[in-house]
Length: 320
Image 1 (cartoon, one colour):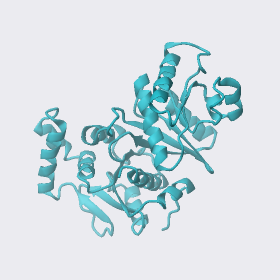
Image 2: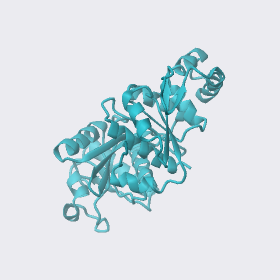
Image 3: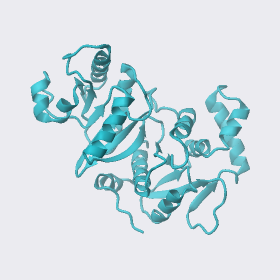
Image 4: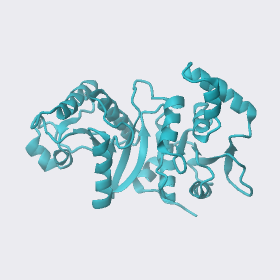
């Protein structure tokens, strides 16, 4: 069965050099099995399924987490070193008998270029293992998430939508940096906007001041990719409204990164766009981690899974 990725994915996928090895945490799920079969002969990605029991008559790559005792013991030693006394040996041994932790150690060891999970395991299971094994990339403390919103040739990012509940102004800056770095891997120029119910002080509250402060510090750090803010969504999205509401005429392009002030706004916002505006939503995509890991919804479709495998492979291109 052939699978044609979304056009915006296909373009970046074709630019990948070599083959990216992607591991699926929930390898015995029917969607994972089908995705591995679909992508078996793909020229850009190689999929391996992580399992706890061998699956007979399966013509795709698998790893059984209980099959290699010496590898398990090596992972125990290494994870104890990574955790630096924050976990007991008993806790580490128990964690590595679960697939999320074993998958992250396989990734950390360089056996894979990226990991996709969440078909069976919860977001908490996947993200906890990311935080404890992979950690944030150099230069940031914040791991965040985004949703790619796509309609035809239009591509926008909504962030953060699933990890940081009520980020501080400093965290908003790092969330914006994570998202801008993600878009640059796709050769898309980042145009961030820090969203609020206020535009440039039209209303002043602790909430709007947090967003204004984030904009200020982001722009000091990023003179090459300046952000709008604090700004209302309509002005950030619509060029004509931007010209009427925003005081800085040098900002004459609408944003393609929308940084929401908290997870309530971000999560609700992307679902409104998806359901009422008929935008396609791809994600959540994890950004800011030291290595590519993505966490699907347990209700994800086969198409969602395959597209996320491709997105993870494209992210891996940017970590080399």
